[in-house]
Amino acid sequence: MKKLIPAYVRVPLIFFAVFAAMEYFIDSGNRPAFIKFPMVSVFLFVFLFLLIAIEITLSAVDNITYHLLTEDQKAKLNEVNSLSFQDSEWYKKLIKSLTKSEPIENEGLLLLDHDYDGIKELDNNLPPWWVYLFYAGIIFGVVYMVRYEILGADNQETELKNELAQAKIEVAEYMKTAPDMMDEKTVTLLTEPTDLAAGKEIFATNCAACHRADAGGQIGPNLTDENWILGGGIKNVFHTLVNGGRDGKGMISWKGTLKPKEMQKVASYVLSLKGSNPIDPKAPDGEVWVDETAPKK
Ligand code: HEC
Image 1 (spheres, protein in one colour):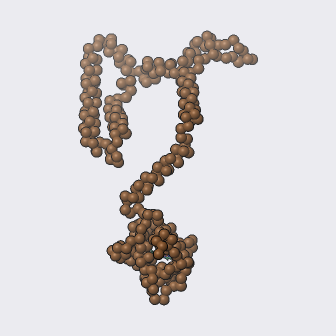
Image 2 (cartoon, rainbow, N blue to C red):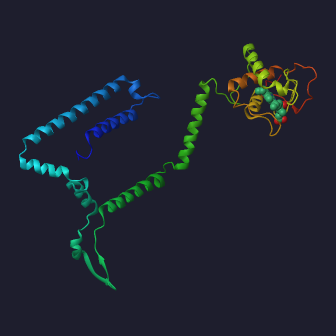
Image 3 (tube, rainbow, N blue to C red):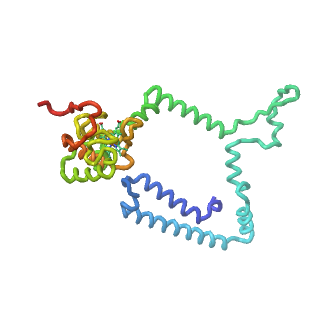
C-alpha cells in the first residue's frame, strides 16, 4: 500500500483532507476558519510539520532496515516491490473476496447435471459484491419506508416549500438592513430637500426628455396633476419606475439604469411637484387617484 501512493502525494492528500474537514466543521461565518481563528492556522502548520517529520522518519527506518537484511531477504523484498499493482497479494485477495470466483480448472466441480440440448449449467457463487449491494438495497428500502411512509418525514415538495419560506424570511431580514434594497412595499416618500434636489437632478437627466423639465408632460403624461394612469402615491410611482409603463407606450423599466435609492428619490421629487401648475400642461390622462391609506379627515 505504501508504495502505491508516494509520499509527495500522500502528505498533501492527508493535509488537505484535514484542512477541508476543519473548514467544514468549524463555523466561521463567511470567512475561512484559518483566517478567522489564527489557532487553526497554527494547528495546520504544526500538523503539516509533523506529517513531513513522520514521512522522513519512516523512510529513514526503512532505509536502515533494508541495510540490515541478508542478501536473500533483500532479493525477496525487491521482488515483492517490483510486482505490479494487480499482481500484489492484497489486491488478489481483495478481488477474490469480492467475487469468490472459482478458477476455471475447478469447472468440473460446479457443473450441474442439467443438460439442455447440450447447453450445461454452472453453479457459480453469487458474487459477494453484488450480494452486499442487494442487502444494502433492502436496508435502504426499509429505512426509507419507515422514515417517509410511517413516520411521515418531509418529502421533497415539503422540503422545497420550507426552504422557500425560510428564504423569504431571510430576504425580508436582509431588506431591513440593506439601505439600497427597496421594493414597492417598503419604499417611503422622501421629503428632505437634499433628497428632492437629488431627485430633481435625476429627473432632468433621465425623464425630462419625455415628461418635460417641469413635468408638465409631452410624450409622457403630465406628472403634476391629480390624474394617474398607473396610480399615484410613492408605492405606485415606484412600481411604475421599476416595471415601466404599459407595453408599447414608451415608458421603460428603470431598474437596470437607476438604483432603488435613486428611483425613490426621483419618485419623491415627482410627487413633490403635485399642484405645481406648469404652463401649458398636457391634458390629464387616467383617473383622479385617491390615496386609500391616507388618514380620513
Ligand atoms: C421615452 C420617454 C419617457 C421617458 C424617458 C420617461 N418616461 Fe415616464 N412615461 C412615459 C410614457 C409614454 C408614460 C405613459 C405610460 C403608460 O401609459 O403606460 C410614462 C409614464 C410615467 C409615469 C406614470 C404616470 C401615470 O399617469 O401613471 C411616471 C410616474 C413616470 N412616467 C415617471 C418617469 C420618470 C421618473 C422618468 C425618469 C426616470 C421617466 N418617466 C422617463 C414616457 C417616458
